[in-house]
Amino acid sequence: MKIIWLGHSGFRIEIEDAVLLIDPWLTGNPVFPADRRAEALAGATHILLTHAHGDHAADTATLGAELGIPVACIHEVSEWLNADGKVQTIGFGKGGTIRLSGAAVTMVNATHSASIDFKTGGLQPAGSAAGFMIAGEGHTIYVSGDTDIMADMDWMGDYHKPDIGILSCGGHYTMDMARAAYAARRYFNFTTVIPCHYKTFPILAQDAAPLIEGLPGVQVIEPQVMTPIIL
Image: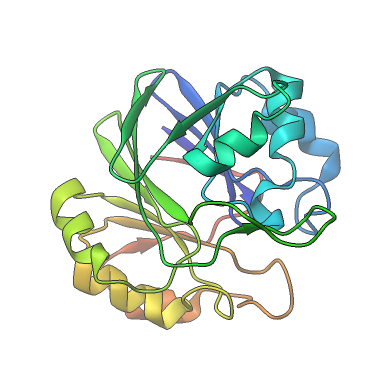
């Protein structure tokens, strides 16, 4: 299994026979190298979208149409993306599980606002924010999406038992590093944690030191953009 950070909350995850693009915001992402776009997208089979804010979803319609691959996301966003028929979508809801080229993807809760905020005409409602449990190759990855600590993490950790956590923890808009460490200790039994939604802008955390310090015995990997993490 290979996990590649695309900057901010974007990831490329190669698992089973799937190549999943998670929240692939590339255009205008200040930490993504534009000259590596083709490399980041090569062989992608599906896009997974946690919610419709522009720093996650602004490229989704373009990439879905360009690559000819489906976008899996919450029902309301799938309906919006598919309105003109140019983008294939798989709309599902929290608690739903879909199979994507051998990987099992379950949508789980996240606590965060959700709207389409990058189009003219003001904010448009877009369902609610979500995270994903992605199971395959003997691992379960928890992609938190934008969230704070929530009580749902208790049953999510107990039921899905993820061993890898990809946690949005840059602060200001999501939980910060210390809160993410607390959540990981209390609710999960991760062997590996990868922070995201940080370093992108000055308002966000620039390093993961509090996360590392708060998770002794856990492998905390500070990802480097376009550098594979092989697990």
